[in-house]
Amino acid sequence: MKSNYVRIFLIALIVVIFMSLMARWEEMYAPKQPAKVDTSAQTTAVQKDNKDVDANNTADQSVTTDVTKQNFNKTDLKPITLNTTVFSDLQISPLNGAIINAALKDYNVSLTDKNPMPMLNNTAGSKYIAQSVIYINGQPQSIVFGQEHTAKKDDQTMVTLKATVQGLDVTRQYIINDTTYEITLKQSVKNTTKAPLSVSFDNEITRQVKPESHSFSILDAHSYSFQGVGLSSSQRTFQKESFADLAKSNEKVDVSTNKGWAAMIQHYFVSLWVPNNPGTSFSVYANKLADNTYQSGVKTQPVVLNADQSVENTNILYTGPTITKNLEAIVKDFGANKPDGLDKLVDYGMLSFISVIIFWLMTIIHGVVANWGLSIILVTVLIKLLFYPLSAKSYKSMAKMRMLQPRMKKLQELYKGDRQKLGRKMMEMYKEEKVNPASGCLPILIQIPVFIALYWVLLESVQLRQAPFIFWIHDLASKDPYFILPILMGISMFVQQKISPTSADPTQAKIMMLMPVIFTVFFASFPSGLVLYWLTNNVISIAQQWYITKKYTAIYKAKRA
Image (cartoon, rainbow, N blue to C red):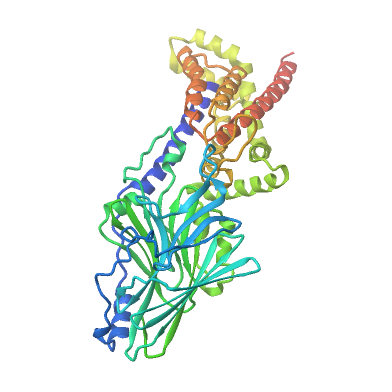
């Protein structure tokens, strides 16, 4: 009977994992209804603001601000290059003041490639660029800034750019903090003409990605991590649109709001614009520009500037690791204008409320032991202590079942031709011995959500990316390169089966003997940190089961003596 509920547990575990992965798959790749474009507020504002605007001021409609079609490499467009504690080769182009390059010093490309992790870049075919585009009378302006001033103060570098376009004086200041991934962009524009001008700001992030055939494999844990855009508004604090969804839709996702942000999301890293202009309305949007090219951004509602009038606009660009405390630090001083949903960028799935607690514990332990592998082991110990009463009940039931096996075999031999009577006699025996054969199943099943939650912690937490453990384990977020941990885990499962009561059914017994092999293969592609957790869990369970089985075996024999 023990094999029955262990089999139920193992099958349930596989089913729950599979359902979790399928839920994530559907969330990212299932066809979605095209989002409705909220244009009522924009239309009203444009009509109201532009009714007195002189049509003669309309800009040249042939101008393009599409970064994939712009040449940032012209000799007369030498970028301003900065290096900070966190950024390597941060480049600001004179063309539209676009940020065309930013690599992360604290994160390597891979274990074998020690170059800084590239985020924003100007590489043909994979451009990933953030820029702020100014619209005059509804038309985008391609601006080449001709004046530049760079100043250093304390831990901040300030780059100031100036230009004049269509009678509009533009002053733009970039404030780069030396120790954070934030770039504050402050703009001031003034109408120097005698005619009114309609002005709006579009802070956008454009990215070219690999062809839209995102592969998914149950054997590759990282293949189902989300890639796409994220938006936040007052109507919906967090929504995601995968590149695959945007590729299928012909409509732009556009939501009017008075607080929010727009992001470009990839595994472990994110780039996003957060506006900080209290009392103003804007839209957050996402769309497909061309094949394999996507854009997200924040665009203000048009404002009419009469002669000598000016307007200011402030936005913060974050491009770096997806770490919740870093992201929330961006908006800590926003007050009532503070947007929500930044914590959702670290996506732990449907059991995030458990994952957050687990990661919090791991972070505290890591602060003491300075090793994420040891942190996983110690968190596992704490989880086992938390569930010990349930585990003890399960192992006690197993011990009792083990003591009843000789009687069970006798009953099976005696009533092998009458299954109904055998079942009735077995139930009488369970009632007499006060044993519930299913009592060991529920306590184990209760622990499955913890396993799933830890799975997403290990998969989505950038802190564990390329985090070493010991010896051959150099990245707890990747599979064991030599499969040592999965093999040890399979051996531990085999040992657990040996010390547990076996099924009297030979077919079931053979199936159960195959489970360690199946799970070894299944776990071979899992992050090594997760396999470390399961191995540690098994070792502790073996010790607990051995102790409790020995204890209740002695008690049972004493009663029978």
